[in-house]
Image 1 (cartoon, rainbow, N blue to C red):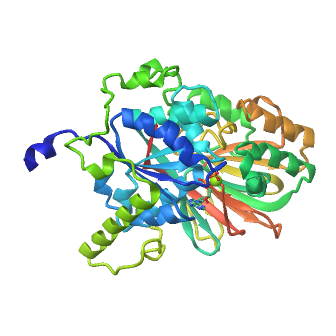
Image 2: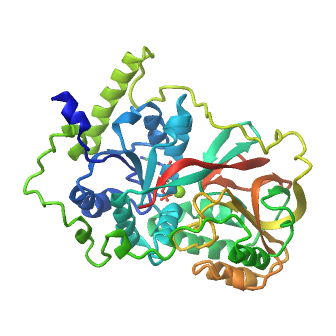
Image 3: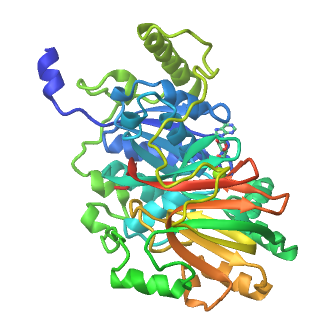
Length: 450
Ligand code: ADP
Ligand code: MG
């Protein structure tokens, strides 16, 4: 009967969103060969949708019925997760919507969050299919960790929610200029770095920030690392030393973790889940199905109809108020610190990794309530910059004494470029160039970390 069915635990249902053009363009192949066999074995129902264009995922999640899903999973690089998060924040019910567990499976060229999840789970830093396998295992395991978001405002007044970084100068230049090397995968960042090093630019600007702790302004990085080690910063260290066996997973033979699941000879849909969510759909079918649902949802809600694939509502980001920020056209609050410099790069990052092999902020946690502000001042030698860059792979750049490299944990920041041309990125996506500011919002989202 209806009642007994509703009382039974039902298998998890995941909405998988796949960008077929992410990374080297092999996301669909990797999904079919690596992801789907594992989540099928874990008895997780899913619906797979391929995005057809930029912002498709963003519009999709604005209109879905959230009650039907236990998680939304981005299969691409970090860019697709950015769309999902901002799509959810554009919903009138954003406060509930952003609580939806979000997963990420690394099939792009920028896989920072996947690398952070992999690291926090205690796996070795890795790339490619091995990173994907680890992250799929963790997704199947399914535990959720609160995730900080940073609300970022640009000069035109547009506001978006960021989970990874805001970058200016060297780092954003490399990120955007290396888009043309996308076909070589994550190696595009290394190649892009070498190209940029050959013609090193500096950028004049003002950088303002609200220190996370009083007295941390202008201290060299080694100082803040020591503080972190002493526990005097509010770092909540994740299960760094949790082993693979603790998770009930086996790295060598990952099928082991689902031992209790009987391998089915044929894919018979479980009676407690609707067939639509447990079966695999090719992109066009599933999108059409979902569009029908969207249309039905909108009819029910009395909303105007619109063709599928067209934005159904004007883009308006909601979200919590930015209590730390003054409007961009007004001076920063008195408690802030401002430096004016020639910068090689400014980076605000809130994940441990900036890329799968860029271990930028080893101490950063998903919900430490901190923005890690880094900047590199002009005057640094190319050799020192290369040393720093090479050391970020292992996260040992803090061991290098470099007076041009500064790290400060903050709650909010403002970048005011004075150099007329340059590139700014939010989570690796290019945004309008000009004054930009952001502040942390503690634990507003949920990330599936296993
Ligand atoms: P990568 O790490 O390879 O850059 P991303 O996930 O960041 O992968 O995706 C790159 C860009 O592609 C993002 O800006 C994303 O919004 C956009 N995108 C998503 N789906 C599509 C699509 N179907 N066609 C074109 N661009 C897309
Ligand atoms: Mg990207």
